[in-house]
Length: 164
Image (tube, rainbow, N blue to C red):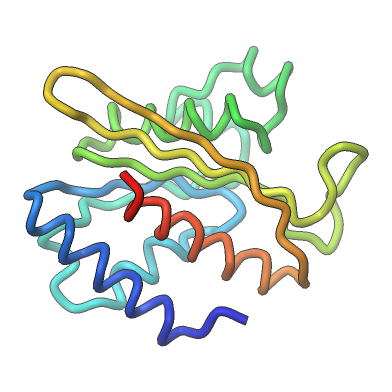
């Protein structure tokens, strides 16, 4: 299991990189329920590089707060490449900042379905580079119970920032 100490070290590393590049991070979370933001704000000084985030557990909030379209949710579902991309782009646009991360998944123990078992988690990142906005998404199937799926989702979402 990912430890709190591992998360703290990862967030500290992300924070140093964001401060060095003079960038601000925003988040859009669903299955992690604000855990990414909690991990970030556990690190003293994170206000220098973290603007805040949106916890959009319910699809109606994904739509109203982040701009995820009804069509995307109807066609692809909340746990999809298209949805996390719209969540990340929506956070970047509506919350502000330079880099956004988004996460939506099925943490369990229920909710799995054919093609989307428990542990299915989609991640999205969007970032500004000059006038352009770039983005990336990633799918992970994470084994374990609800807490393990969520904890490893937080780690994956934050680790993805190191690749940008």
